Length: 86
Image (tube, rainbow, N blue to C red; front, top):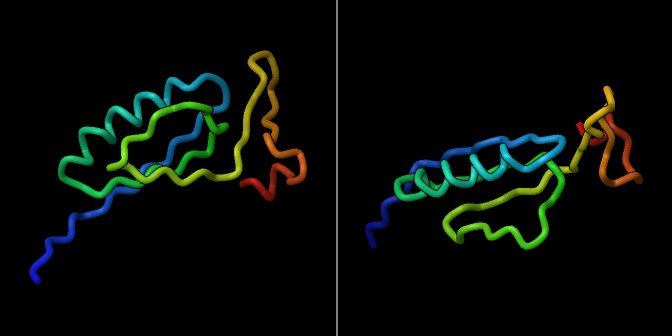
């Protein structure tokens, strides 16, 4: 059997408030997935009910966020430290 293996693309997406970066990365990935096997490493907070196309593999990393008026990053999962998250 002769199977063609598509080249892989790995995209890291990090957002700390708002999901604009993630939405743009998903749209870019949707187009890229026509020719490539696409993996997204998501370092932002998991978005409930966000539809991920079956042609894209989303890998959820430990999430960080930032309050809009704060200077500091925080972990979403309070059982891990920011250093552990990084």
